[in-house]
Image (tube, rainbow, N blue to C red; front, side, top):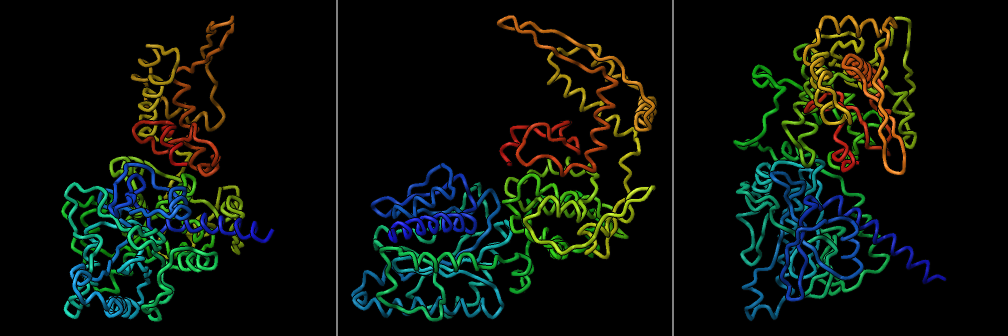
Length: 531
């Protein structure tokens, strides 16, 4: 019975370790490399996920994790090795000498990073090397990452022992159509040549050359120590590391500029950056917990929370402040699509989620906020103060009345309804398209206003019977052009308040509040993939 309990516990450890290794070290989820019997690695275009890492741990395999997705990466690595020429020389009869040199070189860099309070992970390769990893909270530009690692290299380059080599990842700051970057062996891989595991070092300063360093098996106690190191590692904020290393970043020529920052705004450069804003919002424990999944593990509904919080922020000098922040927020997420993001942000006007709502939505997170929304006859009073936005003292909300009827909105809805009618009406009418083409915006503004005031009479709809197999009759309905526009306008108005209420378990008919690409609803396949 005791053996069975140990086996179950070990299985849980393997699962937890696989998840943490995936979370920290896997950037490119579509490519990896597997070590062959001869020690070489074979690149595979296949999914890299926790299940594959779990298989690696259980079955003594070794995988390379590729560092890059397009121009982005989320970790840097210094790979210290004893020079191959040394191994081939007669001096290799004294391996302890060179292992001691290797460890000393790693300690030099560790002392430098510790002096700046930059957190890192050290890993014994299982053969003749040691890795130093720095993992970031968000994905960063490859060119920026290379500038960081160059700065670290400068600190020990002149004093480096010639018998020890150091490879850096990334190896350069150029992309040159390389979309995956170079690979580094995942921690806890099994080294084919040495027949030993690589593993994380708990304390590099007490680590010394010893027979005990070579591990051909992983017992439960050791797996627990490895999980503890991974779980306790503090991800580093890129901007903080840049500041600590005293680097003035050189921007790459092809960097996608934030379209919501005006030239005047760039010249002033007085705006508070995204990291600072998120830090302040994290005084709300619910926001703090959600940000643990940022940037790449936020689900659709969690991302919407941050859109609601930030989209209408303004300062005394900048009405576009919230959209600037959101552009930066989404640019750090894998598969960032600049053109689509711009289209979505341009027409967003959502009300911020309140503390009451967040407590109801996320009861699993402890929240000591006692703010309740105050509602009076004239509406919600001082909404900013009843949401996590109250921690942002120098910002306001851009005034927006969801019930104000605008001709520009009606015209946009007319266009999205033309697309929707063409693609989705099973019995499309030519006259419906003609009516959508020729509506009078002023008349419709009045009709929508009357509807909101309860003074609109709904027109008759079109009803059809379609005869199908086995004598079945399917009843179909179609709305006239007028009702199509009015109903969509009403849905948009309601969505400004209830956009967070959509079920986490559904991917159909999620309203596209910005009408990006002239869609009324988010493309269902794209939404399903993001769940």
